[in-house]
Image 1 (cartoon, rainbow, N blue to C red):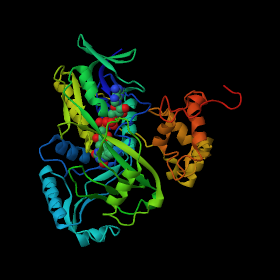
Image 2: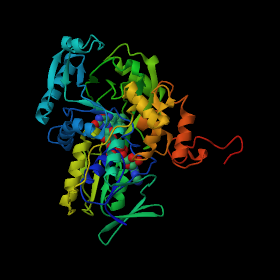
Image 3: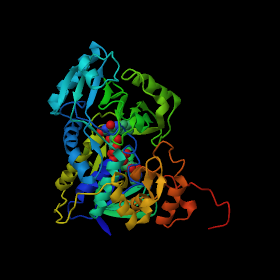
Image 4: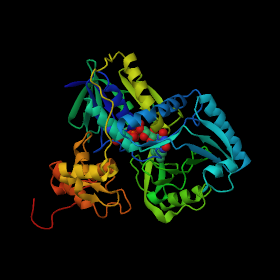
Length: 481
Ligand SMILES: Cc1cc2nc3c(=O)[nH]c(=O)nc-3n(C[C@H](O)[C@H](O)[C@H](O)COP(=O)(O)OP(=O)(O)OC[C@H]3O[C@@H](n4cnc5c(N)ncnc54)[C@H](O)[C@@H]3O)c2cc1C
């Protein structure tokens, strides 16, 4: 079957673009090289919906960030994703830093960012008592927020699929041929045909562009390490606390997450490895030292995990590149979608649809498009009476699997079955938080693995953490098959 549009990459940009296109009468497929969506930059980032005062006025980043941030609250509500408009502060600890903060304020005004103001040190401390008393002032932005980046991506892809989009996991595009008005998109021997192509491959968008004939782009990975603290510390601050940005980026932040944990990081270091996931002693030490300027007494004994995300920085270009291929106008490239790509993603998706229309694709609205989706883990939020009703209907909701996050067997089974399907341990964890609590899966891993195997009709030895090569079991110790 020939598709109207193939989207390469199931990150937040690809997923929201798929959802946007699912409003129209089109056959759309998303091709993702990993075993789940949101496995690139959309897996591990700060999760901040930036207000939009940081990008230079007149850039795509400025326009799409401000527009995307304004769309986020309603979008998250439609997709059943937690979003908090917690606001942010850029803290200044010297008069020199305060001068930069004033420039950011002016930039914010030029970009049309709503809800920004300048605060004195005393006003900062009245709002955020744990901030270091050396603070001299801040830029406050009440229109910024926090969202779970992979939760948003999963929900967007699920909603796109509910509206007819197809998704192929473990489809690593390695060759593209163009003939007779269509693209033949290969992953090894497999081939998908499509009339239009969206290159939203994040870290590999330069390589996909080269497959279409545009070989002038080069992406360099920039690593960002983080520490995540237990929910017990999630109320250490209510705003996202930034430091004054430098040439290296937005600096180390301290922020609550949408799920109620406390996040500290990231670093920003250019590296060679596009797939890097490791954290380092040096990186984590740097975060502690840098974050100490904002909040002196962060209780690091409450760290439950550390992780790394990698930014796809485009060499020689600070702005997002979102444009048709110079070789074939039916391919749209998205390159250098680093921060604020998450915040901008809803607006980027609309921009891509408009570029497709300009390229000749007819967008006929579907009458039955439904942009709403229920959230995953609702059981814990139910009243005792409602819980009893659910358990009567399906006893698996009475079987507690993850004790830290109180996630039941029923919720895990539902998460595995819903769009986009969960085939791995990490996929379950990212949908319903099973294994994400204080014990980090110490108690529930084997139970979750059994459910993944059963629901996906796999042998236990076929269950992986995150796809081929990350099998949990190497073999059976006693009989069985
Ligand atoms: C450390 C860090 C902090 C950040 N903080 C923020 C923030 O607070 N706020 C904000 O707005 N933005 C932030 N960002 C930026 C944001 O995360 C990205 O802009 C956004 O996630 C990019 O989404 P994407 O879909 O373009 O790319 P990705 O999420 O990287 O998705 C690309 C997808 O393409 C797939 N793919 C690649 N090659 C192929 C292939 N050959 N075949 C098939 N599939 C392929 C990948 O597996 C991946 O799933 C941060 C980024 C990082 C790394």
